[in-house]
Every structure is written in C-alpha cells, then in structure tokens.
Amino acid sequence: MVQVAVLGYGTVGSGVVEVIEKNKDMVNKKAGQELNVKYILDLKDFPGDPYESKVIHDFDQIVNDDDVAIVCETMGGVGVAYQFTKALLEKGKSVCTSNKELVAKHGPELLQTAKAHHCNYLFEASVGGGIPIIRPLNYSLTAERIEAINGILNGTTNYILTKMEKEGADFDSVLKEAQEKGYAERNPEADVEGHDACRKIAILSSLMTGMNVDSEKIYTEGITKVTAADFVYAKAAGKSIKLLARSKALGEEEVLAMVAPFMLDKEHPLAMVNDVFNAVFVTGNMLGDSMYYGRGAGKLPTASAVVSDVVDCARHLGKVIMCFWEEKDAKLADLDNVESRYFLRAKASARAAVEAAFDCEEVLTVPGRTEDFAVFTKPVKERDFAAKCEELGSAVESRIRLF
Ligand code: HSE
Image 1 (cartoon, rainbow, N blue to C red):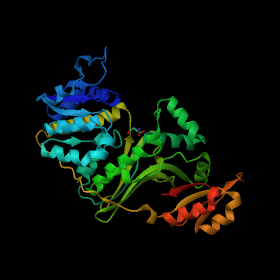
Image 2: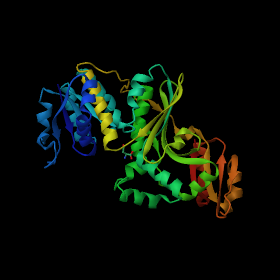
Image 3: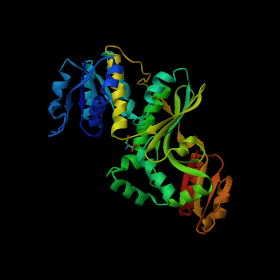
Image 4: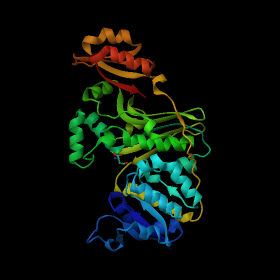
C-alpha cells in the first residue's frame, strides 16, 4: 500500500480524494498497488465530510511520517507551497501538483531537488487542466525537435471570447455574467490580463527547449481591449479571435514566446476550441502538427491529471522519471524585432492616413458601419508598427495580430 497526503482541501484537493476513491479499482490496478489517502492538510475543519477524520492542520505530521511516499500539492501560491514542496522532496517524498505558478517559478530547482533525493516532482495538472500535455512532451514526442507550441491555455478567457463572438456582446458585460455564474474569478486579473496563460506557456516552452523560460520575461497581453466591433470585422473576414499562448524555437537556445489575442482563420483547429475548453497545438519537425484538446480547468478534470501523476509516482518509487528542464535560462527573442501581420481597426476619417502608413494586404469595410474600417497589414516589424500607431493616435481603435 502507498500512503498519500493531500495539501489543500479546496476544489482540486477534494477532487483528488474523490478521483482516488471513485476510480480506486482502476487507479490501484494501474499503480500496481493500493493508494491510501492518509492525511489531508488544510487550515479549516470539514465537519460532516466523509474524509473529515483525515484532515489535519500540522504539516510536520506529513513531512515526518516515513510511511507517506506521495504528496499532492493543491494549495496554490508560491510561498508556503514552495516551502512545503521543497521540504517534502528533501525527505524523498514525491510531489504531484496542479500549481502552475510554483512550477513556472521554481520548476527546475524543484526538479533538481527531487532528482537529488530519488523522488519525483510531477506537474501534469499545471497546464491544460485534465489534458495530457506534460507527459506527451516528456515521454511521447521524444523523437521530435519541437518547433512550436501554440495553445489556448486559459478557460476563462476562452469562455469570454466565445460568448463575445456568438452573442456580439462586449467584454465587460460577458465578464460580469461569467463572474455571476462562477466561471470567472471575482478578481479576474490573472486570467483576463493573460498572466495565467503566460505561466503555462513558460512551462511548455521550458519543456520544449529543455532550458528555463522565465515567465516574467514573456510578452503578455490580455483580452480586455478586444471589442464587439473587432468581432464584427473578424466575422466578415471569416476569422475568430482567441487568446493564444505561443512559443517558437529559434535555433538551439533562443525562443520567441508571447501571450496575446490573435485573429485566426475559422478553419484553423484552434479556432474551433470554444467555451472553457483548452487546446495545445504542437508542431514537431518529424510528426508535423498534433493537437491536445480537452477541459483545461475544473475540479475533476484537474484532479484526474494530479492522480495520473500519483499513479506514475507509485510506479516509480525510488526511481527518477526523466524530465529535461535545466536551470539555465533560455534566451527570449526581442519581440520588437519580430515581424507580425496585424488587423488594425481605425476611425473612417483616418482611412487615407492609415493606408499611407501601412503596406496593406486588404482593406475591410462592413456594410452599415460608417464610423470605422479595418485593414490587414503585410508583415511589419513590431517596433515600426507601434511607432506608426503612436503617430496615428486616437484614430486607431484597435489592433490584433494575425495568426
Ligand atoms: N483560471 C484558470 C482558467 C484555471 O481559467 O483556465 C485553470 O488553470
């Protein structure tokens, strides 16, 4: 029997206990032995909960219990969660986590600690919720040189953009409704400003390059400036707007990573990923494109991924599962020097100035709209595009990169 502890009995933590219990026959068979949740650590008590008797408040009880071999960290945050994870790994206990913030910030260090103590730090649930993507990158695509990863990695923003597209609604009203329904956090900043997707693409980029991609250095733009009018033009052009987290390998040590809204053709597989679903589109140099799709958040999907890591740890007790993520920082390309194609929507009165400023592939007008028009530019250096937009001033209503 393998003894397991769960740190944090919130949405994901309680889901972990539920998955281990509900699927116990399958899970135990696949783990090769029985998994038993011995402790649940939380600040609160849970009177009436079926696992009430397992709830404890003292972390030392777990870290000092030699029987506990695997711990699920579902607390979140980078303070206490980091200290607990480090202490557990130093004691040779494997840790499975859904904590993307901690993995993005301290991933290589914690992997090193695990390796030094013959245990594992696994984080399948940290990106794409229940979608298997960490294990495919680590185990399955090992014959590939991964050239690019493009993902829809945040369910909240994908839900908002899908609603805006389908209902013609504006950002603020959809966000409000999503908050009322509990789909969006009361403080939605990490999601709508792109920080959550940024941490996730930092993790995927690190696995792609084998080096550390620092999330704090990734250019990140959220969806708060996307408007209902942008969707009118996108629809007219047969396109959709998605918040994409992108990473492209430029040679051995350099990577171009960013998070921003993109306009993409409706036929692209990523354009078909709607509502709270996530997808990761991976391009390898031999396989070509492959896509991993599913529920990127939620109690049971995320818990399922954590438990899959627990099973992996149980199968590898005392053995280190290889993960290529060194502490050395990858070089991040300077976005200013990169060429992008843009959708630019501007006031109708500025048409001559806009057409003079940019080399345009197409000029778009929508019947019935007299106040604005839009263009699709040819590739233009980010720095030059920004400078020209600055010159055009308030004539520019919005700008979104083309995928
Ligand atoms: N807030 C995240 C999302 C949860 O909306 O995707 C999963 O990481």
